Image (cartoon, rainbow, N blue to C red; front, side, top):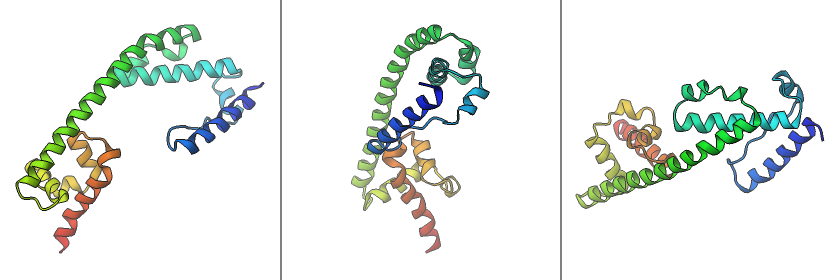
Length: 178
């Protein structure tokens, strides 16, 4: 099998997976000229490059891009990349577990704030969130950036809070216009 056929096969598999799990799979650049221009001519070279990319991203996520760059990952052999991935995989898994634990704590803290505001007399959840924003000194200038600013400010997951925060941010401007 040649490189172009191999990449086409990977893309067909990725397309099938992305239909089952939208947003989780990406396609690879198919034109073999793109890869040849980067010095990649064989499936083995392609796989090594993909592993190098994964290694770079994993380490830059754990530490920093500058740290990952200084490791010169793109000049490592396939064997060294595999060992490096295994070495950092354990750190990455530990960080992921800790990140999920901290996200859960932040979410619980925020939800407790909402419950406290509702108990204090906020008529609904949106009002409770507006009160929290006021207590946090969040300004209308901040809210011009939309709900994404609130997910950033409270360090909460966009997937869970993005739409709700967008609605709350927009309600500030709706109230001003009224």
